[in-house]
Image 1 (cartoon, rainbow, N blue to C red):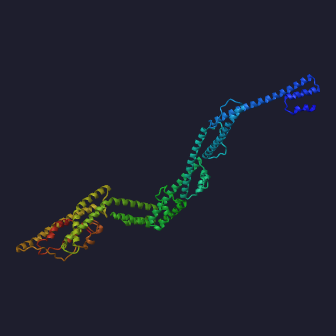
Image 2 (cartoon, rainbow, N blue to C red):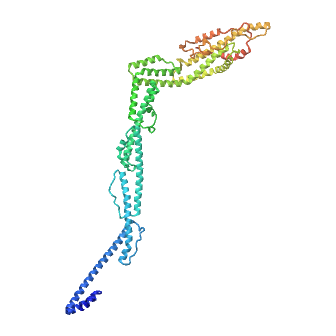
Length: 587
């Protein structure tokens, strides 16, 4: 029972008092003296003190650690706030009171949010800087695999905006460079198509990424690539210009040779692809294959073939040009010696002392000079034609006036009458024509310091002869009129003696319509166009006079019973008198 009672306190709440009481009971039961008891109690007290001391030290260390943690948290909070450049939307506590754990508990959420913002901001900086580094590498011509280093000391939005602005500028520059690259590649493609070159090999020589299989964003945009593309385009353009000049020269030679040898259109059409660009500019030639080397070589071969053919047909070509020259001089009424010219051409070709091209060039020069001379003579020749036409009308009018049946009611008489009216007006202008022609001819001779010849005859001499013949005809007609008056006088006196009424004269000859005259050498009485001073026409001033006298003798004589002319003849006498002053052109 005693043991049970002694142990019962152990079964309850154990405290220092109960333990000390239990220890007293044990000492009493054992019989421990007071000295031992005091010594043991002192030892127990010292051990309890050490335990408390140890616990206090641990508590103090824990408090120091918490203070350091709070200080580090405050420092990190300040650093993050400064790095991010703003207090952002995170609620930063402003509490310096309370326990340490309370302060730490207040800082921890804000610190956690700032850490998340920093990590997100670092990712944004890294992404922007990576893109900047990539574009800079593309522009510089070298790609770098290094990860860009983010300066975490400054992660402010202002700096991020600066990087983004830099990135936008670089992206715009990249877009512009890519546009230039694509333009250059397109130009190279078009030029290669025109020149017949391999586009793929040409463009990949500049950079392998410029082929058609590579994506647009993957094409090189470096300074070196742009420079090489520009040089390639310039080289191709120069090549295109040279080839076009060469092809145009060949096309010109082909056309000249074709024209010389009268090449048919069927053969010319075979080279339409060569001659179609003869006057085109460099930018106008865009047809694929228009300037290939094979095309130029084909044209060169054809030119060489035609040159050889031209050498074999040199005489024919030269005589063709000589005929052209003679035709020009014939139209200009310039007399030349074609036989000697053709003999000279034959001798030059047979001797081989002159190149065919030089001979043709000389003949082309002669043709050009002949055209210039013909052009300078054109105005005078036109006036000579008008004058000769007027002389033909003058000759016809004189024949018409000599026809005694011109006023009869024969068929076509009214047409001849109208023509006569127009002829009289034209004939009245002949003196003015002659004066103007003389003035023009003298001015031409002064300007060119040579005589103006018409079919080998000096034109001024022809005009002078015409004036002399005209004067002689005037005198002849005046003499005939006086002779007619003398012949008419006896008839007038006889009619007066018998007091008979005069009657109109009747023609002796039969009715004779105005028509062609055989002795004038042309249809409708038109004389040959050469005047009398031309020796080739066998005419001279004396022959013209003799022809005039014969025509006078062949005129019908007045009838024996002629007293007075009819009213119609009287009315036409003044005009006929004007016509009598004219002299027909000698055949």
